[in-house]
Length: 269
Ligand SMILES: C[S@@+](CC[C@H](N)C(=O)[O-])C[C@H]1O[C@@H](n2cnc3c(N)ncnc32)[C@H](O)[C@@H]1O
Image (cartoon, rainbow, N blue to C red; front, side):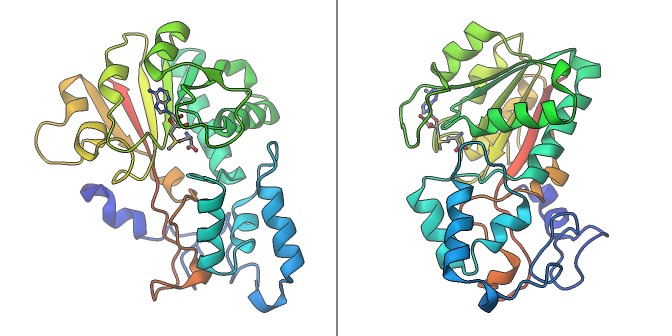
């Protein structure tokens, strides 16, 4: 976890549930008066099946309600190879962040590398359309080498991350849950067309802690290559990923939701 941001990540914002610190726009078991015993097995099963539909973007609260216990949630992400479970509030905030970058970067040419099933790009595109912002997005292209092929990804362009950037010449690169132990960022920074890259994931598992995220206090690789880092805390608070503990699971002996995954922008200076 980023030392300099660790404190602020657990500090609840002002507009939060008094019981567990979950932002009110997300909702939590207290705010929605969720009583686990009132949820039937059938409704939970239906809710979980919906989460797997290719075009369904659930709300944050909808995801939490589908998993009354941590054990259920754990089995679900493991069985379905889920790294990040995209939710409406997160994608909406990400689209707003990206649209704000147009003033600086011009129309957005976004390439997602190692995109897996391609849902992140698809949802960004759909939400941008819903918000009437699609004109800002010249391209949003999910790509993947298919090295892992965990889930159906027929709408994803089959290219290695390096070839994808070389072919599509993006100004923004997106990477969610870079494979562990591999650092792709050095190569990303070498492409002049790339003005920013955004990493999503658990920094202790994705890529290389030092090379990819620059977590230590000595010369950080992104700094050396003239990039600056911005941890997008408002997005971090909305994330749901494998390993997360939801407020109502209470397995850590606290009643807080703990997002493990981060969203971090690296911008060319
Ligand atoms: C941990 S998964 C993450 C998938 C997706 N981004 C997500 O968040 O669910 C890593 C992905 O990287 C892809 N991958 C591995 N090596 C690659 C490479 N050299 N170039 C492009 N993609 C690669 C794998 O096929 C896999 O889909």
